[in-house]
Length: 193
Image (cartoon, rainbow, N blue to C red):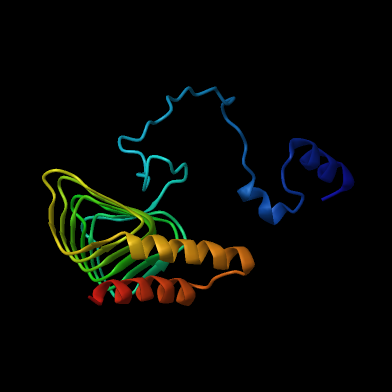
């Protein structure tokens, strides 16, 4: 191959090595513009609460999980969890969601079934489709008409615990163990007559 062959191949955009010539892509038809309609999701990713702007992580209806689940993002459960849930953000237990164990989060919304205690730093909402068997510990609790609930509600201990956490956060960073200790202390204090 001489210099003029190299120049000709370079001008065509083809490879300079003749052994690679079979891999050269030669356009046969000029590209045409293709118009596509944007696809709209039938069911956008759910969010844990109306105030939340970020999409939530979701465990779907067919998923089963055993053990301790921890995360720092909003979470929607449509499946089944046997064990504890520790979230620093919002937790939503959907209509098909089932939890057998204690759950801790910033705020909790229940549409499904829970067998265990619920601990929230801000609020717990038990909606009309919910079935809850366990204690509720949060500064604000709402139980909708039609919901099935069997347990105790402790708002005073939860409010003290939340204030304690806020005070500790202003002085230093709290780890999850500290949050669990404060929330656990609130429940133990509520259990004594």
